Length: 104
Image (cartoon, rainbow, N blue to C red; front, side):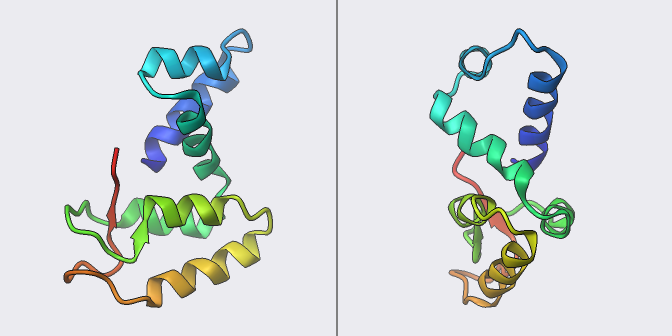
């Protein structure tokens, strides 16, 4: 998900004539979903590094897409890191602590 967000952001940055609405149509998602997805690139670098090193998981852990999107809306990276640490401490359903299960 984070890799996809980075790739889509690069497409937008690389083509000034490409709007978010056009990109959303090209990739087959709702424009509002695309905006929420693109907000993931605003996560603190430490959070992004942590996420990118996690193995894929089919079970739901404490780190979910919706929780990451909430954190990404916080402009202060230090506050993001604090909230991310809180999430990592929450008990997960199943046994995949620290892994991410995404809906899309």
